[in-house]
Image 1 (cartoon, helix red, strand yellow):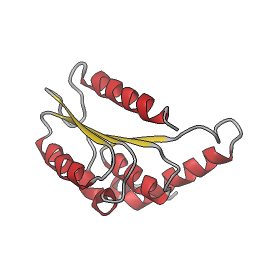
Image 2 (cartoon, rainbow, N blue to C red):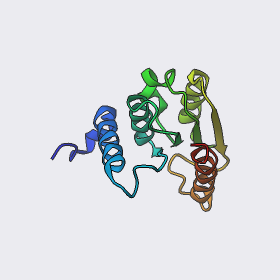
Image 3 (cartoon, rainbow, N blue to C red):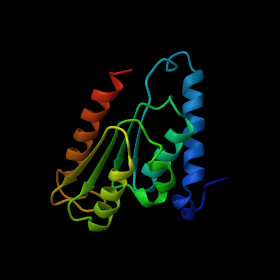
Length: 146
């Protein structure tokens, strides 16, 4: 099966093709075809979401990246013109630097939220809930506009 190997977690092309296929399936279903679509991705999944949104111009309304590896989607960042929220842990210095650089490349609505006392996986008490709340607010705000 394609993608069954752990090294594929860095295969942004593979992951973004899967998102595009899932989105196409949703758009074919009577129950979901009129719903606005937003992507949430963490770590390398965030960059797959950015790449897929770029492929699906006009079909994706919003992106949330939690602890994303924005360096893996560098080629797509300047093309993103939908609202994107970067959520990163305050102790994740490497990702903070990458997301700050990515933030400057994006021309559309964007926001960078750094959660104090959180590491890359947001395993500290309450940090994942805070990240989820930020994501929910972002989705609620920008999905409503469609």
